[in-house]
Length: 77
Image (tube, rainbow, N blue to C red; front, side, top):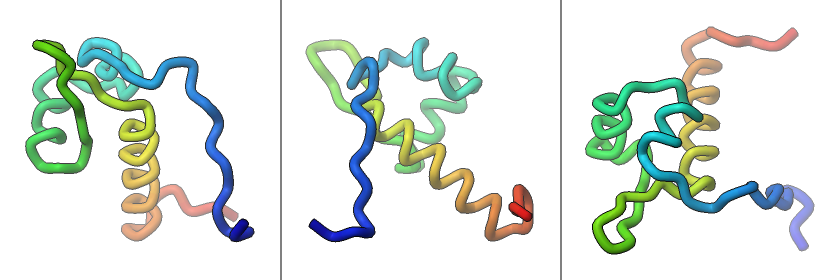
């Protein structure tokens, strides 16, 4: 196994409804849907429900952190 690939912790849940994702990301419904349309956050549909995978939420947070580091914010010592 490649040493650079780290195993991810299994999340408590694998799929979150939009209101749950809103709470997890501290974002409004409109911002969540804006990020979905922009392709920065991914979702799946099960029946009529739109669900956001936990892995998509983690990738989005990692992307935000990476972008912040590029612009000079959030630098570590």
